[in-house]
Amino acid sequence: MTERNVAEIARTTGRTAEEARAGLARFNAQGRLVLPSEVAAAALWLCQPGSDAVNGQAIALSGGEV
Image (cartoon, rainbow, N blue to C red; front, side, top):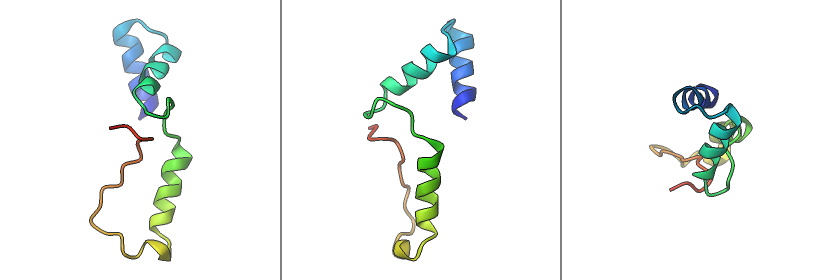
C-alpha cells in the first residue's frame, strides 16, 4: 500500500519516490513510516492469551500520528 501511494505521489507531483516517501514520513510524529514488521507484531500480539480482554477496538499503529 505504501509503495502504491509513493508511486502515485511521485507521478502526480513530479517528485522522486524518495522525496514522496520522505514527505509522508514528515507527517509521522516519529519522523518515519511504520514498518510492516511493527504491524505484524501487533497482529500477533492480538492472537496471544494476554490480549484476551481486547475486543471491539481500533488499534492505531500510526507512530504517534494524530
